[in-house]
Length: 467
Image 1 (tube, helix red, strand yellow):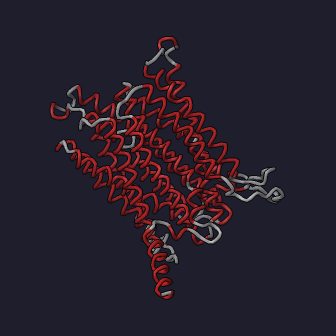
Image 2 (cartoon, helix red, strand yellow):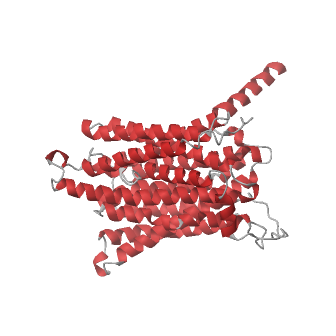
Image 3 (cartoon, one colour):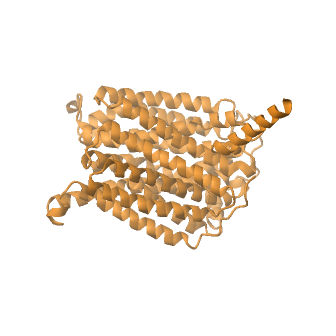
């Protein structure tokens, strides 16, 4: 009987490791419960991203009547801070705190900045849209207040995520680091899915008061999640000696960017991220204006997008763990994205919500495959003493490209849509979908260009299979 019990337990443990994504990222020094608790900071990041890119852009454009171009610029404002992610990672690599921490001070600072931005954001948005007592304020107060709120949230996101991923990498064994970072991003996607569903349910009956409640509850949830995530994670070393020679950031950056294929790799990451990111500000308005979907239904599209990304990250981790080439995996994501955007374009012609939802799911799947492939390639090329810098560089390029893509997508959609509505492209294209479809077509072209750029990189990032 004992023999049968031992075999059942062994089979159950083995099945759990195979079936639970990233369960093999745990180690004796970093058990799975502690690892999942640390990943809660990524849940708060995913929640904020859904709020900014998903829910708020639909609410601002459709319910509050803010022009899409202004909304796109607002949402892309956090990109101003994105280039500093590499600097944040470098500083946290070499930080000496009187309390003995390196990463925790940066994560906590980012948490408080993000909390502050979310706390003031709903009121700034109401003034921006002309609601409440907005007439008592000068016209510039609304855009300025909303811009500051978006900047604060963006700065907090970048600081928290960069230092948090570096802390996760510090705590994990070297052989498990790529899987640990992958788990961090899966938790971010899981947070995005849950948050999108919750926001969609809470805002199904939209009102300005409900919007204030939802955003401020998100601010409190951010503070709670990140506090729990940080509790007793980084070991305090008050007597930690300062580095003998703290390398200047520019010198460290030159050393990193001068590595083999580094610049081509960063260029591929940036272009591919832009190709996937131009649709971020458009998917929900596209569903609302072209396919007549409600707020709750379009917010759930963000959950479908995140679900596709979750599947992509999990699938990529399983395949890359067997030693597959990371850039071939990223290339598979690019091809998936091209099919996805073609499906989204066809959904307007057939007025098919299921076809649109399928396209959104495929967009998330392609982005997940592409993101994990490029992240794994970046981790594989990172010097041991530049983990924070490498992760910061990846995040800086990705976030900067995504921010530019969001602004560019909104501006192009508005401009082409306005020209089409005047009949400049003929009566057949004088429809609300013309601006959106133009942007999706541009994304397909950019993905094709990314695939050509990565051809020279394929085969350069093959990793040994992980046990």
